[in-house]
Length: 437
Ligand code: AMP
Ligand code: GLY
Image 1: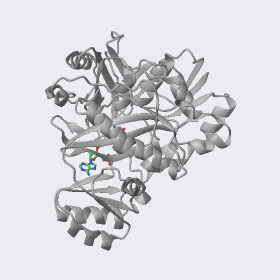
Image 2: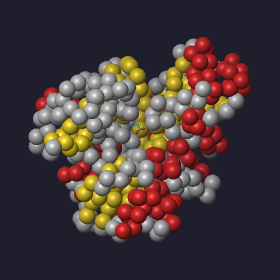
Image 3: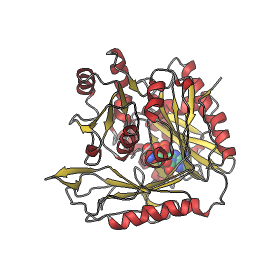
């Protein structure tokens, strides 16, 4: 099988690494890829949002399956374009990708399906939104409805901050069209977790739950980032909670999307807050999470390419999902200044061969004169793989110490919250795909 992966981050490196294990694979391409992916795949210099060029490449090269990493091409309709050209692709259609592309749509859908989530209102009129602030307590959360590269969620500590935020988004259009609507919602207290589900629109597998560390600094302080590290399985999601998430959130989502005549096929990401009264859904993503994918994929024993192909063909029924009893911890190494401005082109040293307990997934990196240099905010994901959580943490941080580049920035407390939780049997195994009715 000839496979094309679209994207250039740590998530896509992890996808390429996992797909590379498959006996079905004959040739792997990645567009545009990065310095690490180049060791596994032929990198093709087509940007992830150039839908026409990607479709032409897949057609010319007779690609048997395309797997899409980032949300932008999905929300722009890459799956529809490929399907029209009869090119097999794993991912949701433009209509189904609205679950991520429009927070207003997603929240209204959650309400319609009775899915537990924060109370909210959707506004496009600045004055009406201002008036509605009377109904909320602080802190409160204001979100630009459209895609905003992870920057569209603002936690407002008080009313005056909320008023300014509404003005910036709705009147000044600081996020452009993505801010033509806002979601104003209740602030939820709890611990966050992520669940990835592979679905063909009728059946699904839940992958092991994971936990991202979104803030820049130790102790969950500082600005939100794309994610500074992750752990899987997430201890906060006990098997009992995982079952509740499946019944109260995942199944109603898939059932509701099918009822809307826009079945979701691909990887559905549930961004959850585990509150004192149970799991609540913060957001959907219509794709694999990053860095979550860098800890979840090393836990999967089965041939994921076979599973992606079956899901893309609407035929997940004959597959099985086997998961290792392992722990994975990913520490992200970022450029100094991230998530703001940062320097590029800095040489990276210490990228030697590591043991099989360590996987280095490359993100913002490129090759310059045959040397690996930084080219993005999140530079590398260093994943430690252990038979217990402590050893996974130890392996990850040992490797972190041996890799160097100017301004290397990372959190020193990835998985510490998980370590403080009591040890329990973790993974609620789902060896065969489940139907939701
Ligand atoms: P989202 O893109 O909607 O997941 O939001 C990004 C991040 O903002 C989440 O991962 C949370 O850390 C935070 N967040 C979003 N919505 C809420 C909420 N209602 N209450 C508390 N934190 C939130
Ligand atoms: N780690 C958060 C995301 O992928 O959106």
